[in-house]
Each structure stands twice: as C-alpha cells, then as structure tokens.
Image (cartoon, rainbow, N blue to C red; front, side, top):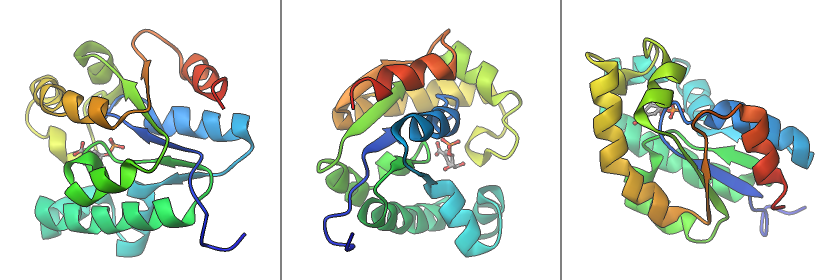
Length: 170
Ligand code: S3P
C-alpha cells in the first residue's frame, strides 16, 4: 500500500486509566492489525520517557511533539492507534480526528484511579492522583465525546470485553 490512502482502522482516545494501551493491544489482535501508541513513538524518538520529557522540556514542548507524533501516526498507520490522554487538547489533532473512526474509552474517576495506581510515570498526576484525575476527566470528557464516533464504557469491565465490543463493530 502506498502511504497515500493509509488510514488507521480505529483511533482510541480517553483519559489515563481508560485502558487505551491494554484494550488497544487486544483490539489490534482481534482485528489482525498492528497497534501504534503515540506515547511510545514520542519516547522512542526522544530517547527518554514521557515523564522525563515533561521534567526536562516541560508540558508545552511535549504537546508540540505530541501533535506531530499524532499527525504522523494517523498518516502512516493502518491498524489501531492509541493516543495519550491529552492529545485531543491540540487543535491540529482535533481537526485531523474528524477524518477518522474514533473510539472514546470512557471511565469514571474510581476506575481510572484504580487502574493508574499511584500514577507513577504519569507527570499529569503528580501531587494528588484522585484529585488530578477528577479535574482532568471533568475538563476533557466533553472534548473526547465531541471527537468520538463511538463511546465505550470501561467501568467495571475487563479489557477483553471492551475490546470485543469494539471489534464487533468492524
Ligand atoms: C497525558 C497522558 C499520558 C501521556 C502524558 C500526558 C495526559 O498518556 O501522554 O503523561 O495529559 O493525559 P496515557 O493517557 O496513555 O497515560
């Protein structure tokens, strides 16, 4: 396939703790395609973790790099693409997502807190994991919803069941 016309089958969005990485891997297996995770792309290109990028260069720099990584993944990958929880904050990303099948993995505060545990490796949760998750969910839920072709609830559900529900649509 040429790079023109390549497009992801599904783009997963949602907050930290929604299960994007786990569901993404299961969904990719079910659909027989590869998973691309933009946080992994960013860390690989920088030669350091997302957390270290936040510490060394700051969030604004991370968001710029993230918008470019998302644009590249959407243009190059024809499998499942999983985006970092804050990727939808970028205008460019929201515009690009209008052309894609976007699944919003919805999660409530309690389940998100359970899944991220102490929040290690997640710079946006520094200080007070529960409080930060609550604020981020309130701020971002309307954005995820406005981008979504489908919304899938993940509270109290194993990732396998969530992946099955999405795979059944394709
Ligand atoms: C972030 C979410 C993280 C990562 C970075 C910032 C956010 O990705 O991109 O730490 O702003 O919500 P996950 O949602 O995959 O944890």
